[in-house]
Image 1: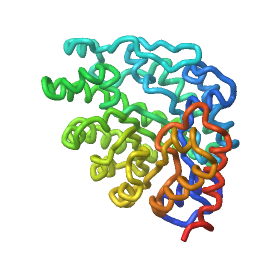
Image 2: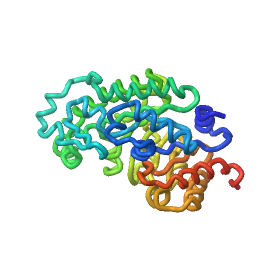
Image 3: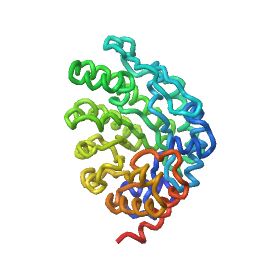
Image 4: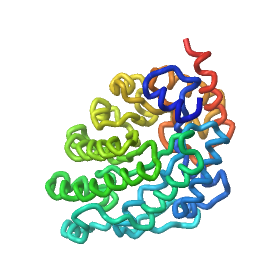
Length: 337
């Protein structure tokens, strides 16, 4: 059973040889092949090389074009700095004042250098592992993109002071994300991941008003194009569990502070993906602790569940801990009651 078959059967709740491993690898992957982060962010060939190396080394079941939250933002015109071996930095929000929205296009932006680089990554993945390993493209949720363009504190104040303006901005963002999602599926992506991290910081009412309708539209477009939608919201989303599956996602990530069993129950037929602590368990723990946490997550998550740390695998994670996760998944069927 190859990784694509394993994912497909798992999403249907069918028996598989082992649960799939969908760990998110970015900084770890770049450093694993001895590359600086700026090269990983700016050169799709480095990103692909890194993903393919960790795929084989740690028995993963996915390659992914995820890198940083500034692909679309850079092509919108946000000034992003890329330190040689550090995280990218947004210098200033593009929309310092509400009237600056007039400088944005009224519809989806044309893809620039950074969005096209992600498309090239997906195409290269398709050449290398298409049909054998799921390829994950990535977009920002409309709310997440608005947050990058405007700034988080300011945007949250806008919810109350100028909600109509926020929806105007979200409409511009969602058009771009829909076009980008469809382009990645056309390029060969099997999965479209959507990051909406800011959503964990707002109430269910605000999520339902400012995030969820736009997530649905992006996922509807991705599905229509032939992609599998995956929702990723970092942080504690316990208060959103009943709403997240209504986004239309087929795979929903949860972070370590969310109860895996409660999420699986709330998500129904959608696959829950997660969710042990990436720092305390994966980076700082022992192989035995990783095996225990991996097995428990799969038991709590049920027949649709997919293994992953709650969020990105941290830089400096011991290789033996990643191998322990892989071993726990290989033996899970035998160890399960």
